Length: 232
Image (cartoon, rainbow, N blue to C red; front, side, top):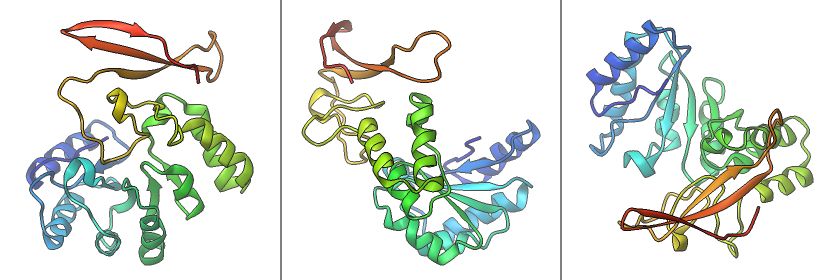
C-alpha cells in the first residue's frame, strides 16, 4: 500500500494504519515538492521504518515528487532494516545498474517505467501501470528477459507494447494528441486537451489477455465525441 506523505509524521501514521489493516508492505515516495536534503530523506525513511514492522519499498519518482534520489542515497537508505525494495522510476536505466552495484546485497530493485531495459540490468520485478491494462504481456516480458534470456522474443513483445517515435500513440496513458508519449516524464499537459487516447480491451469473455483497440476521444466544451484511429 502506498503510504507516502508530505511530512514524516503523516507517513508514519498512514504506514501504521496500513500495517494494522494487514498490508504486506508499504511503498513510500519521498515528501513531495519540499525538496528535502539527503540527510532529511534518510531520517524520513528511518523514522517510518522504526515505527512499523513491514518491509518498505522506496519509491523514486522525480517526475511526481520533484525529488530525485540518486543511487548513492538509495544505497544509504538500504542500510535501514525495513527498506528492502526500491521502485526506480526515472528514465535512466543505469540507475538500476548502480543501485545493484552499491546495495544489491541489501535491496531488491524493481523497475517503475523502463521494464525491458531494467530487467536486462538486473531488476527483479516491475511495478508497472501498464500491467493493469496488459497484464499478460507485462508478465511475459519479464519472463522472456529474466527467466528465458530470449532477447529477440522480448524485444518483439516490447515493440508491441510501446509505440515507436514515428507513431506517437500510447499504450495506457492519456495525453493530448500532439503530446502522446509512451510513459515519459517530460510531457507538458495542456489545460484543454485536444484528444485523449484510451486503450480498450476487445478480448472475449474468459480470454486471458488482449487483443486491444486504441480509441480516440475529443472533448470540446464538456462534450465527448469519438474519432476514428488505427487499431493496435
